[in-house]
Image 1 (cartoon, rainbow, N blue to C red):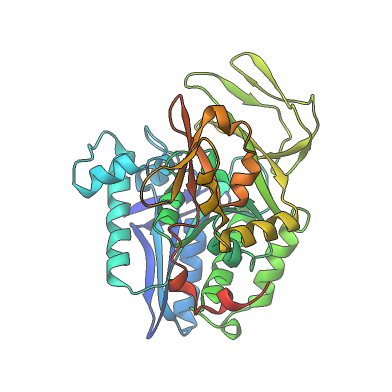
Image 2 (image 1 turned 90 degrees about the vertical axis):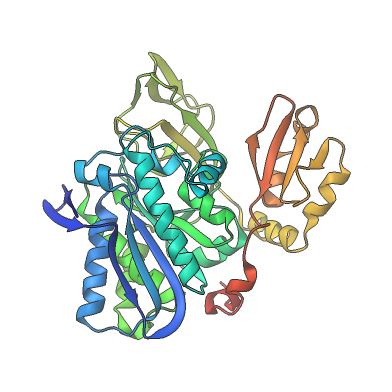
Length: 403
């Protein structure tokens, strides 16, 4: 057991790897909440403790299984983001292969935490039948309305449309090794919820509302068993000015060892103008080169994401991409010069860099592909749809309901 302190409420609680778990009397889906994967973000831990306690106290009927897992216990106990490595950047293919063979070296506390979390996730996936839902609870260093971070698959889009919050697509294209990207590649519905600023009491309340809504949408509890509309209206009111679907199109990365300081007063979704000074990095001014909105500006000592820039996605583009993906138009892409399948799995494409500049990035996004640099000659673009376990969710109420 460790002690976790929350500055927002000046409360301290004791938790273990499992914040709690409830096995329902009836069969149903399994929902897995993760909280505190960054140790300076304890709000989700406190919210899960409260919701689970309320469900037990009211003897709410549970259909399926609820799991609440604590992330970086070492960092949570110390109120630090991480020890040596960001635990939410370690879920790479190479590290996962080593873990599967028990060959991952325990280089730091973060590696030890990753091994323990992976073990618990494997146990849940092997013990339960599914369908599975994964929600990763976070807060930000800047003030923010609550929002969802969504790996861009149609399954994720469909499920997250139920929440009255802004959705941010495409963060997986700019980050290496986030936990949710790994889970998405297993084909399950998984996304992040950012409840507010680290030390804002409202972040805990937003997390509580989100947890209850998630349980209702998955079908684990009934609408009539909780004050559903109060939770819905809470999130709707908190995010009213930012509601919509956005896409990340730029990331300012902080180079190792470079001092970085964000200009004061920036918060998520704030409009920025071309020519505006946003930050100072390594003694040089960082100037906005487009009109856009700032996203996740860094106001803490640890982390290498200075800020992102986002823009709203037109509804017609979302509909068009849905049609392209359902009709599997991507199968035609290898007919184009400089484009080939990366493997026999047909879940990724290699684009010749000489040709790629003529292929709009937006077209790849419409088809469901997100890019990663591969080598000096090729760009690897990976499908967000290839792994999706559509069959597992086809009978879920949300899957068949138009939004």
